[in-house]
Length: 287
Figure 1 (cartoon, one colour):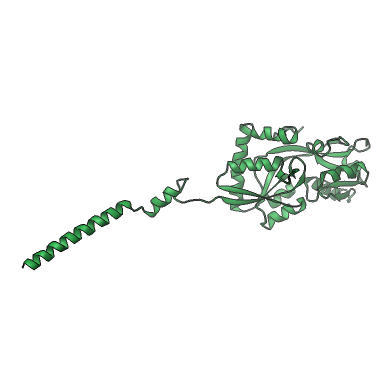
Figure 2: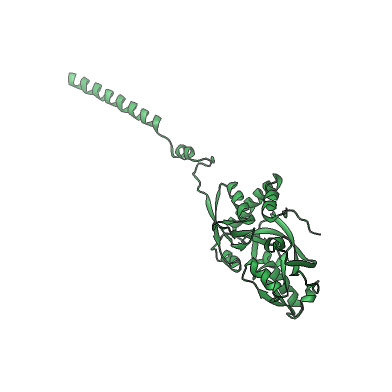
């Protein structure tokens, strides 16, 4: 009988100790959701890693996207994107440089996620690519000739002459559209993308003219060897380019639009434009 009482008492004590131990452990444990919340900084219950975005750009456009004396990629487009990146913690931007003529193809083949090279939106491009909605610059395209050339005032004056433009550029599209309606009257010559080559080819007479956005001339021709002539050929918004019919691209484009609106409102965009391009080209000033 005594042994039975002792055994029962021992079992009661053991159960009490086990219960206290379990209670103590529960007090120190965290549920999976509590653990995740403690690591998350966005309240979603999960730790989110920024999505890497590969941005395609060039290196041969002075003041826009180029390599400085230390080999560092910089310029208006590049520095603007760095600011946008800072304001979008859900993304991490990484630049990939290449020849201008390869940028659109690289976007199509998913080698890059976004294209930044002061790209104009035009009907031909809009059929194939997605553009963000909020323009970060706006300018006009004009004919550019040597300073002493007074014979050119319009595209009609360029019939039978060589005109230099960048392959796949908006300026090339202007000439292609003209040639479709005028039996290929203008001899289109594609540049290698270097600004100093453009000035040299026009001033030496290897080509009669080139087409440029209005702000570009003082950037590539600081010695004023060239001049604009005639009326504007077109005006355009400058936007970023993404893959069309792609949900992730649309989400990214919308996020970029939000930041550009902020940068316009607080004056950052206009200030950056003046710093790099010598004027505020961020507003629509079409004539």
